[in-house]
Length: 138
Image (cartoon, rainbow, N blue to C red):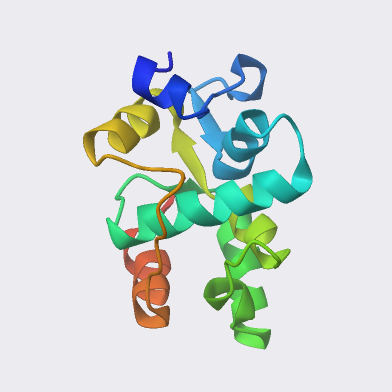
């Protein structure tokens, strides 16, 4: 499932985390790739979200209930969509609700040359547009 380059970079998907359609949350990918270490998972999840956002990844999916939950949260407070720093638990909130098709996700990371050590910093407007325009409800 994981290509050699991504496996070498430490990006893994735990088969037990996949749903019946092959989807997994960004948080579960980050957690599996970080040996279940919450701090490292948060750091990687923030990088993955930022990378996907900058590239305007079109296949992030959330359930209708999850989208409603996130929309309600953002109406009260924009911080979760704006603070994806490794120190912020707001990364967890977004990454736990952002689901991707595992195989396509790994191919996407490889095709667009995701580097875990690189810095990805999307602007606030890009983050809001990505969530509003590019996430799918499913």
